[in-house]
Image (cartoon, rainbow, N blue to C red; front, side, top):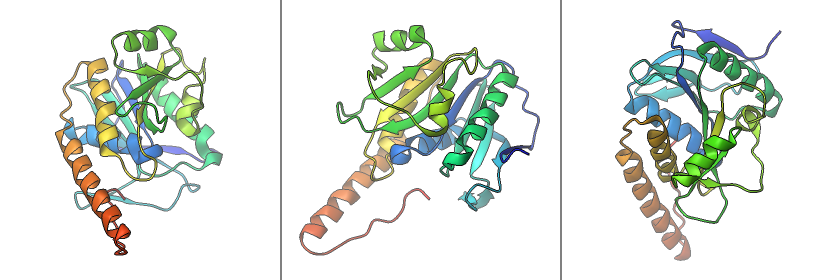
Length: 239
């Protein structure tokens, strides 16, 4: 019996829709970007994933309790977003990836994009691209939308989705340069700007950039106070 089950709230009928996956990685970039995308594009929640092996967590947004691993659609933009606000246990990564791929196959998605963060410590504001399609990532690099990763590794669900041959459609991982220690809305904005260019849609990232500025100022103040021996604790911006 599978440990991961998809609970359908409304029929997932959107053939040919691009699928975007955002899970919590470094800087929580994937989760922040995917959640922001569903809000800005006014997407509709049509289902969620459940498992008795997942952490017992319920997310709260706009006063409403929500399952932490949700599926949204936008008929207008022909887009499906799968987002998670909890870390998938390693033991469930395989089943979770398979469940996502089943949706991708059902939709006959022409492209699967995963969003996340990475700490390469090479170029501030960079977005890195890794793909099962050499032609796709080479094209994005040529247009200076992404940088390439020569050596490294991706893990968890996103890593499994990049396994060559899992689906016929190309899989593209977009990883924004980020700090691992704290939520990074600026990195989320950077990765969404690339998504907007790929999908040829408008995504206003102003609010994310403003949150990044607030967080940056708060962090600097905390460091300043800690140096003066006045420890200051930052509140959580993302729960």
